[in-house]
Image (cartoon, rainbow, N blue to C red):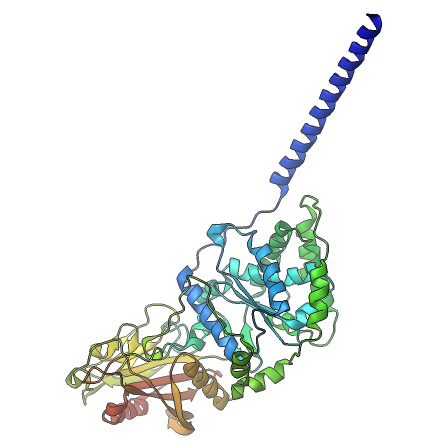
Length: 505
């Protein structure tokens, strides 16, 4: 009995110790969980810019389609694209559903280190970024930084803060000609297609915020945010002008130190090591035929990349459920009914209007139509000449201030023409010609597209779109697009020429 009793006491002691140990372990586990909940960084509320979610998605995916025309893109089936998509989805999973976007991930075979993400979610990563990263976390750091720009809606906020266009300040926020020029809508959001391809203009404050939010995304996805700071430090140490990424993403000051300071107080975490998939993809990426930015810019002029992408099966597809709309004239179909010529013919009597930066005469029976939102143009047209957001008779006026102040008038005019052509079925009829406007030497080029109005028989008809660009003393360029159906354009041209003659700055 004694031995049994002693054994029983020993068992009781073991049970008590075991229970105490279990209690201590449970307490420690609870404390650790509480620490993780309390100390783990949370993504901020991105706020509410003036541009709606739908508008941002439309803009971003229209721009992505333009990238496929001006830049070589690897097909979705390529190992590099598949790998980048897998990484991207890990990052997307960290974002609360109410703040997420229809992200897509693509790879550009460009040698320079760069990446960019467009409003609404399309992201493009240069092959040079993959081959330059030392580990998976560094590559993820670049992607998380770009994703943070989309999450914080920086482009939309920039479009809401101020116009990037020097012409018609206070009335028009970006280029949006008679056919809904994509170039101008992007310019209003700080996105431009220049000589070196697509350029996103972010402020240093935006960059600092993208670093901070990107670090949180990395941490939540299981990657060490320190890798982001390491990659930026490595890029900065390259000397000279540095890679294109640092040009497009200005250093907000003490970038690496700011990232390190932010993550220092976060709870310790077992981060994901670099993967075999990264090593394998990096090796494959080094064998991909890549191009310099200059080569890509030259190829874009001849339409080389659009043809190459088509041959390679690199065809842009918006995500399921996202419809990328085009203006009526770009769809090649007439959207309104036939218009009575008497309802749109201009009066012979002109009245002068003061639009702020310019003064211009208009037919007495035509109205000034101010833009309803930033990114729209100022229109002078008869009410019957409008078909929804499209204009079939009248003139659209706006301006552009290029990021590269060294661009000539001919280059800016060519960019405008290319933008109009990319937005739908518009075609250029001949090359730009000199024209004198308000004491300045401008450029004139005739284009052709489909009118939003059908002809008298109800059939689609072609329209003429006369583009006139006029340089300004501050480096900006004012442009006007005079519109009328092709069969009737000659009846409207004398009025359009008189309006040009009346122009004053």
